[in-house]
Image (cartoon, rainbow, N blue to C red):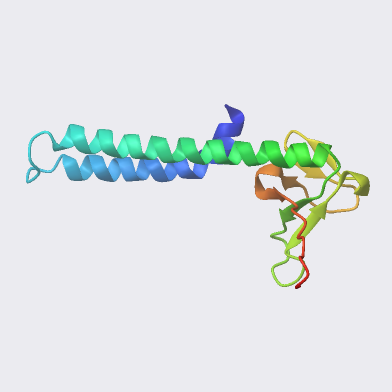
Length: 130
């Protein structure tokens, strides 16, 4: 549950805001009867579906990143500290990186990286022209 809240807190806040707007609009006197139930249930259903899908995709990516790291493969994480140069950091087990509770850390680097903000490194294979 902690991981769900950590990953989806922003989206939950946005969904609650949208639900409040739907409640406000559907309870106005100029709206037809029954709009309240239909509108709120529709908005709630759509928001629940989107947040659930986002959580599933994100946790699936976390699992893939952690498996790749544990198998000795490279992982690429976004570095928000510097926006002009070196916007990504390559993480490997062989470079003193440690994975603990979905966080990558290294004594050689000043900050940690959350596994949800990383991707597996996919090597590019170039096929020569014939």
